Length: 244
Image 1 (cartoon, rainbow, N blue to C red):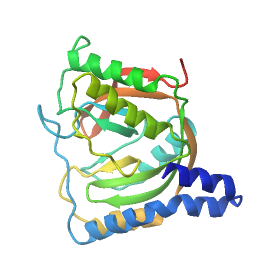
Image 2 (tube, helix red, strand yellow):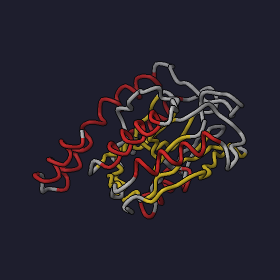
Image 3 (spheres, rainbow, N blue to C red):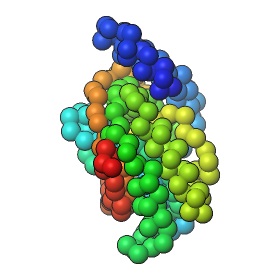
Image 4 (cartoon, rainbow, N blue to C red):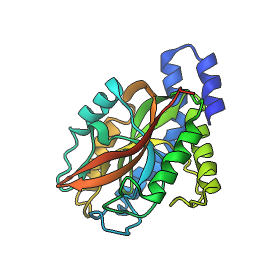
């Protein structure tokens, strides 16, 4: 998808047309998400448990600045009691899911060290990622914002990181699966969804939301912690892109 987007950016001068072109890849995903919720096929997360296959350590990029603020402000308008609404430094783009959930991951943990070393190797000489954040969509497990890469950094980082893990004999939780969509989650359902129509209606009202373009200069290994009704994202290891 990246070469197509780069071509569009080079040739489309009108901002409205550029926005439409970038959003086209997101339309099918949104349609499927709407249909899933309206047909009663919502799923939901449970609080983190030791060894659970969800919410384990992951490699991520976290948006900063005005784009993060705009997404946080919009997420705060979601009327979703009992569910996990995300904002601020909880907002993230996942590169790879790494392992089942562990509550404690000490500094000298061998896997943590391997993840950090693999990420540093993968990020070497890569510039900060640039992406356009736009479009809100429901999906069976919540609500997300589309992330549209404006360069090849995210895809290159993902491929390099996977190779660096393999070279260290570490198999991540994605088991080689390639995610076909970049996104940031605004909401995870944390209980059966009582009124899916209301969530779909909110998403429809913000379907074309434009949060702007941002640089993502830091790649991280993080762990997720549920604090009350909020998920906190703690940094375990990090590397700054654009440094030799």
